[in-house]
Amino acid sequence: MPPNLHQCVAQGKRPRKQELLVMVRTMVDSIQKVCLNPSRSQCSEIARRIMEKYPKSFADVTMEGDLIGCRYGSLLNQIKTRVEHVNRDNTLVRVRKPKRINENESTPSSESTASKCAKTDSYGCINWHPVDLPEDETPESVEEKRKEMVKLFSQEGPRAAERGQVEEWMKTTYASQRYAINNNPPPSIDELKDQWPFLFMKRFLCAHFNTLTGIDVNTRLTESLNTKGKKVLHFFESQLSRWKNDVRTVLKDINQAGKEDVDYGVASIITTMAYFKEKENALFLLADVSINVI
Image 1 (cartoon, rainbow, N blue to C red):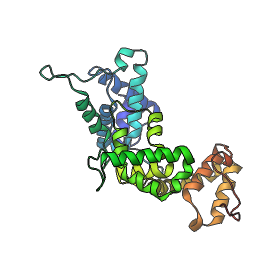
Image 2 (image 1 turned 45 degrees about the vertical axis):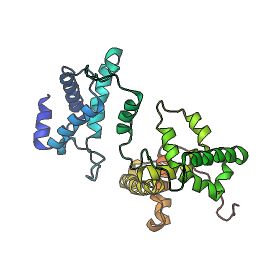
Image 3 (image 1 turned 180 degrees about the horizontal axis):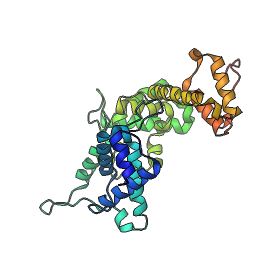
């Protein structure tokens, strides 16, 4: 390792870019003596240990000193990128070998393979593969509701979603929806659209995600945009002299609107678009607020 890097780490300072690149290259060379193509999780463990031992030198922080994400994402990405770069011309190394099966074990059936997939895929879910149907429902009655929804969608299109019974049927058939999605081999998107056309509408997709994870994605996204939006705006405002007139004009309009009336998520997006010289109508549909839309 470069002597300057040792000195930075000992003093709790952040290393310069060139020193960090040399460190990553040296690390990857050492790692590949043991494993030519380490997985992302293995690289993650290495990056985490380095960050925890030397947080002042390698932890991801904002200009204000706030921690970012898992705190070692930048170092992890540099390590993994270096591994992929070194292996770019070696396809035999890049393609992972399947896990070995114990010779004493029989060949796994499709059912056991599916369960192994589900064990990984279901992380973060609270209702991954429900077994029980709602009360007073049978497989036949649920299938009838599915067919009826397919028929309604083919006749009326997305407008049929306004029928109250469709919302109730989508809740009732949740277990069947999960069964179709988790099927092995998995169905294609087109096959799922044919079987569950309403599932691909925002309203029902968000409701399905809420049942699956217990997270209201609309609320979570709004909260995240508001929190991250404040940090983005603070960054632009703290370095006002660096920006051109487009960004300054947007920031001025935001300040004149008053902090209480500002939607920080939208404001941060508009400011970022001004920085990249993007037109607002590329993302936003502008309308007269005095017009009633029926």
